[in-house]
Structures are given as structure tokens and as C-alpha cells.
Amino acid sequence: MHQAGVWHADLNAYNILLDRQGAAWLIDFDRGRRGKLTPRQRRDNLLRLRRSLLKVAGEPGLAYWQGLEQAYRRLGEA
Image 1 (cartoon, rainbow, N blue to C red):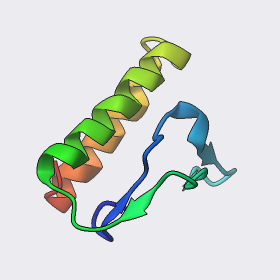
Image 2 (spheres, rainbow, N blue to C red; image 1 turned 180 degrees about the horizontal axis):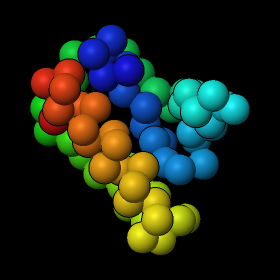
Image 3 (cartoon, one colour; image 1 turned 60 degrees about the vertical axis):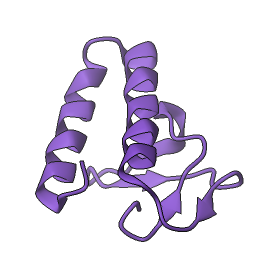
Image 4 (tube, one colour; image 1 turned 90 degrees about the horizontal axis):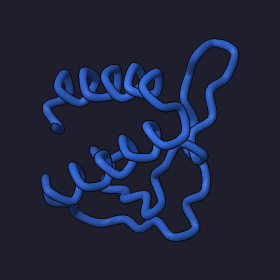
């Protein structure tokens, strides 16, 4: 998403759906926008998601966050 220059203005645990195969789908882009994102904007967006995962799922929510961080590192986005 960030590689495509898409900023999800409300990235949180409730806006991520997982299908039976474990693929993640982002929803609710009504406040999102396209454009060049700075590394700080990307990081702030992801930290908002981390806070949401902790709030909704507690410590087990961090497992999702750790997987996301690893994926971003592989992409060179973090």
C-alpha cells in the first residue's frame, strides 16, 4: 500500500480483514489519499496500527505487528 503511495488515514485493527487463507484485506479508504509519503508518515501510520492492535487484542496482537514489521523490513519500507 505504501509502495503505491496510498495513505490510509484510519489504519487500525478494525479495518483489516483476514480471509480463510490468511491473506489480509484493507478496507475503509474514505479518508485515504494518494501521493508521495515520507518515511515518517509511513512509520506514524504503522504505529497507529500497532496501538490499535494492542488496544483490541492486547499482547497477542503484537504477533500481527511483528509479522508486519518483518514484511516492511524485507521491502525496505520501515
